[in-house]
Image (cartoon, rainbow, N blue to C red; front, side, top):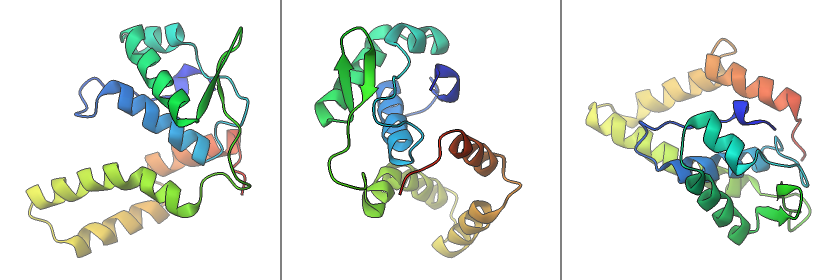
Length: 148
């Protein structure tokens, strides 16, 4: 997977190293990054997003400590073998969404919106084939199909 498939925003309230770690976890959980697959180098990621290489290095190091990535001499960072048969459970994958869902809840509260209409809109967007976000997600999955 090359650096062009990643999204990093300097304007996000989420620190950049966390944006990187969360994306790697999601890509691995969804099967978009396979066991043994090489990640973009620290330099490539830093150059692509105009960020400090130490930020990328920090994210990769945290993922190594978690056992998500392995540092391979001569190959850089690769996805670590999963522990267990099926990788992450559905519950574990849902937990990966919690921070973003909490952001949506805070934003909805700030806008004075009730949970019902927000959930209905989320459901409609989730099912909509015309949604650019959903379409992009489905295209990425076609490139690297999920295992499960």
